[in-house]
Length: 217
Image (cartoon, rainbow, N blue to C red):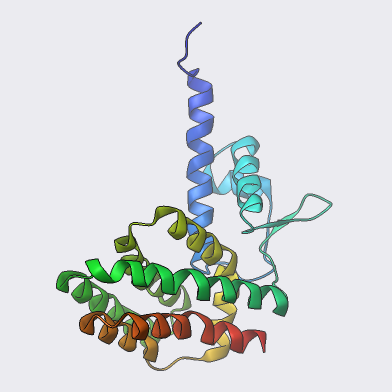
């Protein structure tokens, strides 16, 4: 018996993965707001795939908490309750300071310069009032640091939290109406330069929870 997958199976898997990754990125970066519906037919038409890869991609995102599936089978981004926002904020407060602390011994000058450059692009997104670019660059700022932690399981959990929060972050951006860079990013960079682990933990925890707690309140 051949262990090689049939071409049709391989093609379906590739199509499913392509749709999944595109939707995952879209949701994480807040390109869709809370409660927005998606249809399998619409996704199939958009990505040029059959219903099966679209359905599998949606099921995978439902399992990750990125989409909600109603009893009628309609998929939509979740509208998070205040309790759920608080729970996800608490998860960020647990995971991300630990990732930052683990990354600190490997936070070389080039990494810090990269983070400062990303922070500058966040300023540009704020000036353009571009919510999606703001969320994307903000997550890039954090991920750039956390990758140095060399803790892939912890980072994967963190990204799942980001994924669940993406549409809500879009709503939060509209409420905050930012006009300047997040102050805690400067504190994060300063703590990295100083090798200050307690200061780094504090700055990261404040950065990842302040806005979410405001939204929940």
